[in-house]
Image 1: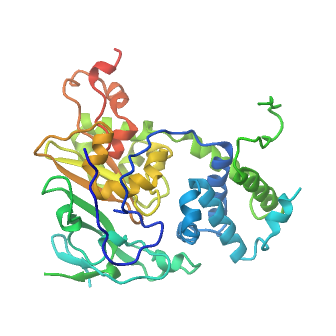
Image 2: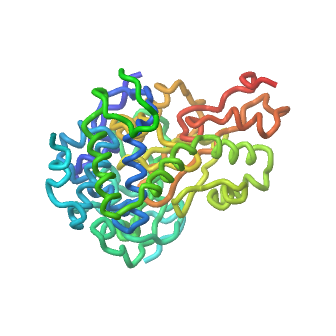
Image 3: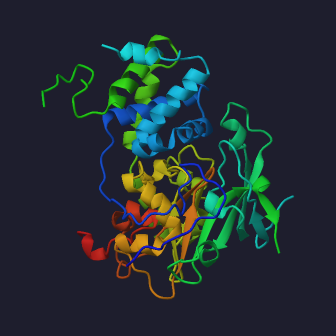
Length: 105
Length: 93
Length: 209
């Protein structure tokens, strides 16, 4: 069966706004169990939310602010991590570049 | 205004800078209110650290797939439903 | 791959993306600063790994055997979950939609990945994929076909796009030939994919009595 070839309404779309986005790609149904670091990222967002430093709308907004090619390339929890860092940096909890410095060998 | 189940409504076609939860494929489209949900905090402002008040009523709005996609491959009666905030809806014929 | 002493924190290995080391460093920094507590993070992980489709399946199986419960589930799935002692999750509203001989439902979140995790466990990768988020709304019958589901000619397909605070759960149809099964046995037929709407429940022959 051929997938539908769709046209999009003329209103401009951000990269996360995927409903009806032109694609003929089949659904890749392979699954993976969440890695430790992914569970950690998810739980970190939850912990920050309970402390009032993040909410789900901020998390989504941060994800949506990624450069389009980065958004499409990144994995799901890489997007979450980007957004968490964005939120913490915005609020001054994290200084810009601080995490990079900490990770530097 | 408050919309009622069965009422025809149109989703605003406006572009919105920044976070919002109205999908592009529904903007400018006309559908029918299926359910009236409760009011919830506005994600458009909550996303930037505000409280998201006042709360906005949320509606489950149904659309005919054949109205949305010119090449829709499916049945004439197929429908799609999305939760749309009141401030994105207008009365329609 | 080297062996790990399980008393140590996991060592980043070459198979992990840079994000792995990054999030661990971030957590360490935030804990050091007292912004969050490690225990809070651990509890979050424990909750996540405790989630599976089993709770959702219990709701469906109970609805199949108890018509009054079915009405309560369709009226307010969150309250129905609480009634069975289940955790409905943080969403303020959970709505169960029922498949019938005339209507089949399918759920997507085109904007991100909204999903009733408390009742179904973490969403599968494909649910979060760009392809599903695109085609579930514009080509749902094509997507169903890829999942091996072909609906009868007179069945209306309803796709629900979870765009806001509501979480949706599909109540699939009780399989024919399942009349003799117990509620627990019925629950084993209810798969995660059936509660998303991209599969039908398993056939009763799959149950070992």
